[in-house]
Every structure is written in C-alpha cells, then in structure tokens.
Image 1 (cartoon, rainbow, N blue to C red):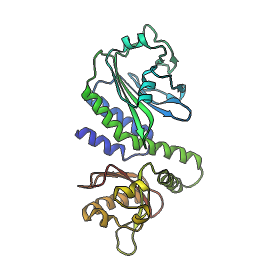
Image 2: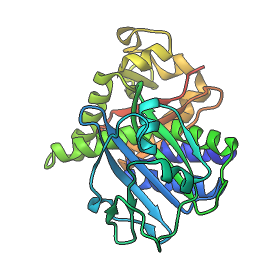
Image 3: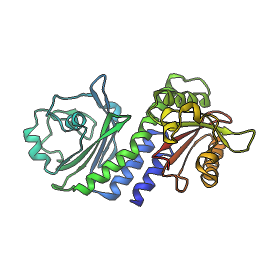
Image 4: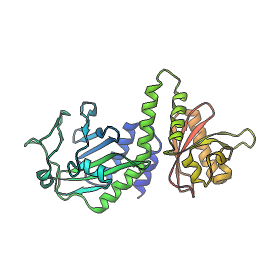
Length: 301
C-alpha cells in the first residue's frame, strides 16, 4: 500500500496527462504483470471511446493515429461492457473470450487498428479492465494486459481499482487544464489556470478552494470554494468564505499547506502535500500572483 500512497501523491502533483499516465504505468508495472496498458476516455454524449494512452512492448504509441471507437451494444466488446455495467472485469483467457466476441479491435506496432487479430501478432492472454469514474459518471477505462494465461487475481483487480480511484480526479483536472488552456491561448498562464479552477468549482465536481495570505492574521484565508469543498468541512460555500486554514485544520496542517502554497506561488508550478491527520491529499496550483487553488482529494477529518 505504500506504493499506492506514493503514486497517489505523485498523481496529485501534476496537471500534465503524459506524466499522469507515466505514473500509472510505473505503479502497475511494479505490482503486476503488464505487457500492455491502455487508458481510454468515454464521452457519454457521443458514446465514443478514445484511446488516450497506449503502452506496448516498444513503449508508448502515438495515439493521435488511432481512431475513436463507438460504444458497442450490450454484451459486446470488453471495454464497452465495463463502461455500460460500471463494473471491473478480469479476463484470464482472452483467446476463448475472443471466440465469443462479434467485434474486436487490435492495434499493431504501426499504430493501425484492425477488427481481426493477425495470426503472427503476439496474443494478449489475460487482462484486467477497470472503469474510470468521476462525479458519478464513467469517464473511461484502464486496461492492463499480459501474454500469460491466468495472469491476474482478485488482489490485482483491487489494486487497479484503487489506482483508478486515485487517478480519476487528476485525469479530469488535467483534461480541464488542457482544454481550457487551448481555448484561451494567448492570454497569460495565470489567468488560464484561474479560469480552470473557477470552472471546476462551478461544476462542483471537485473539492476546490482558492486561498491567499490574510492581511489581518498572517495565515491562509479562503477566498472562495466549491460546494464539495465546503461540504467536506460541514459548511456552506458562503460560510467557508473568509475562514482560515489554521482555524479549520489546526496549526500543523496549516504550516504544511502554507509551505506548499508558498512554493507554488513562487515557482508557478503545482505541488501536492498531505498534512498529518487530515486524511486528505491537497494539490496546490498557482492561479494568480497571490492566489492559489487548493484541490482536496479525500475526506477531511
């Protein structure tokens, strides 16, 4: 579990998707067999699956060449089944399952996609597929593969599900970050990040607080917060505004979080920290010269 905690902190410390996928790959390869790894996104409105990360024996593939794939009807396609049922799946004999599947997709080393597996292609024999969920919705799936039959156990499944839980928010934040940054290209970076954080709060899908140094008491003061962040403290959004981190979490947690905020404001990057006894990981992102967004992952005790 220490590897999972380490991976969780690393995931919370970046808003770059390629870094998130690399962290996921590092954790998975360290705890179970992994000859291939796919992370796909799912759009409920379009009912399309899109490959966001595809790792083979040769390393990460260029997913920009891979087409989007439609969600298949009930009972068809392993990823489609996982997304429709919202339940994980262990496949310990892929060859037998493929015989029963009406539609399959295979990506080769040239990043081309085929509906039939070539005879000379290395065959995936086992796989674990886990749904990615965020704000109550399925947003994609993680697919880990092995060339060995019977490679995975229920323990492996639980580990991958735990990783998915820790990766869901960072992936969503990174997607928001990338989309918003491209939409407002040409404006200063701090404004871009601020817009992203406000969007996250408005959609109320994450616990987000905007904090700055209080001029009256010298501690971190909450400028605004999402409904989810306020609820984690048992307060309304209006009630949380103007509260101090010291008053909410105590001196020790305030000192830890303030260090991360100061670092993020100075460097302009992102920082992750886990104040003792709070039960949560906090990701800090600079949004302006004196304002930082603190994103809460986990329940606050």
